[in-house]
Length: 273
Picture 1 (cartoon, rainbow, N blue to C red):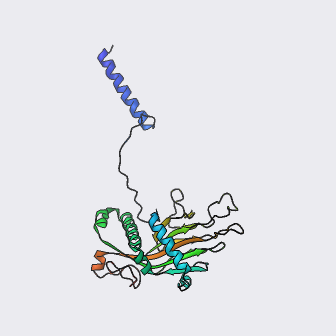
Picture 2 (cartoon, helix red, strand yellow; picture 1 turned 60 degrees about the horizontal axis):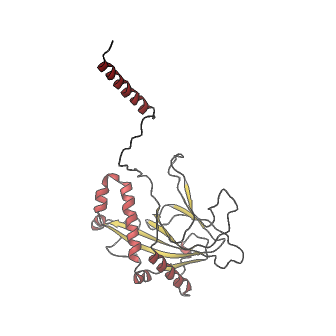
Picture 3 (cartoon, rainbow, N blue to C red; picture 1 turned 90 degrees about the vertical axis):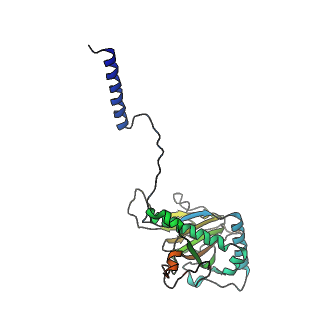
């Protein structure tokens, strides 16, 4: 007959084995682990979303009011895909005079750094140490009305595109309950990934005043038309977009051009070269 000491030893071993079985079956006692996680995603360009600071939102609304009211404002519609009557150019000097140019160039640089870190996760420290130059090209206002829309398109002769929302009217509800957010929304689409469990080919985002998006110029996007109630006074969906390019100081110092035809970025320069 085993001694008391031997029996206790056998009981401890049995409990230990039981613990292993429970752990293997996922039935063991919950245990928390503190772990660092990196999501490696080098094969896609994200859409950067933020919200304009109230001061920037107010300034851009005032700038757009001024540009729309000015009868001498140049139309930019001939260069755009939108089936929209009012698409107006915003001159850089007004952005510099009001002090908002630096905000937008800084936001573009942040987008570049985030994308480069995602693109090359083994070089994050070097990317953050690098100095990045950004340059705004063209900025324009889109004063959209019911029934107008922007077909699927990309932006050319640039590397980065943006959109910010200044005014959003009250829309009539969707005719289809299972698609409540289509009208007046922006659609981003890309079929690069074939994984239907962990990716989708498109995303529809309803506009909200103050929302600001930055994305790669080759990112396909569109804007759906919308409807307002008959006799409604405020029907304008107003947004502002601009295109930009960027370059690292290292590449600039080597004389290497930005990755688009006939584009170069000079340090501190905010105007097209």
